Length: 235
Image (cartoon, rainbow, N blue to C red):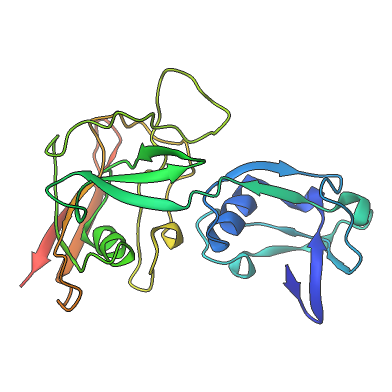
């Protein structure tokens, strides 16, 4: 990571899964697959960050994560941390009338999967429509309008169990997000979605249209204790 005075490596004792989530997202490399210690990719020869990084996992940049005041004084370049990210590189909309409408799918290590529709809103849809050069989001579609996903819906690339899991859940894009992978979401694999609960959208295809404004309201239902969201378009 870029430190004061130049680039430096990070101690493996001060790096966990939440930190990895942030780094992979910041690098536009998908989700973390494996965190490797003991200088698995070779020893660095520059300065070293020895404070414990304490990311929550939803930060957009590693520099925005808090860090402890203590230092791992026994860390040397023998303890340089390494990271493997999934590297999902493509997005598409399928089963719609054209390439700008349909079920949201991500390519993850050369295999396609879907995204949970939990709290998927017009803001997330607008980010995706722009990213696909499909104009603005016209609507977020519910039920099984565009069909059930046929691809497995899993998060861990080394987990090939038959019980498919969704790759992304509770995607919460912000006004400044330009790409879907910049949007905070639940950790990969942490969801209770099935193949019928996938995000589906319609885009305008006209890149010159102004995006409609929307208001999202979320609350925790008393029984069962689940987060529920509703959205209203502002006229």
